[in-house]
Picture 1 (cartoon, rainbow, N blue to C red):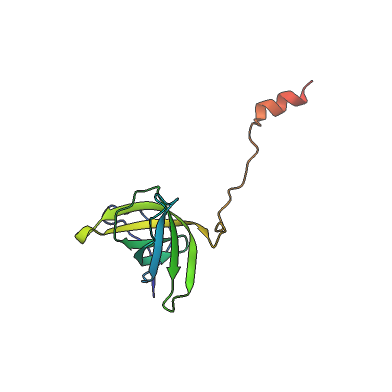
Picture 2 (tube, rainbow, N blue to C red):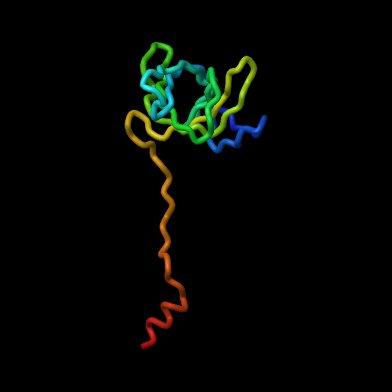
Amino acid sequence: MTLTPEAVSDGVPLRLESRKRVVHVVEYSHYPRRLATENRRIAYTQDRSEGGLGLDLPERVRPGELLQVTVRDIDGEVEIDGLARVVWCQETEGGRARAGVSILRENGQRPMMRVRSRAVVGRSPVREATANVR
């Protein structure tokens, strides 16, 4: 498996992370489930990056939609069990779809997120200068 940088193609958004081209079985359902009788469906990964998955799905999904996903490795062991948000989706031949999803929660926990440094808000040089003159 090789890591390759993503290029813009076919209207798919630019990726900031490298991806691995790998195929795994994915069980998924809409979150929250729409119907009590709705069963999990089967999809396949096309690629995988640090923060998400490229999926080959039997149906079209909408960007922003949440999916409960379970990714299994070749031995059937669960690699990822979590919640994902659909970032983009394109219809393909035969009524199938390709989609990019971002993993929001994995195994019940949020993944590490970057935190921006916080600057002091509301202080200006003029206010500080006038505050010191009394």
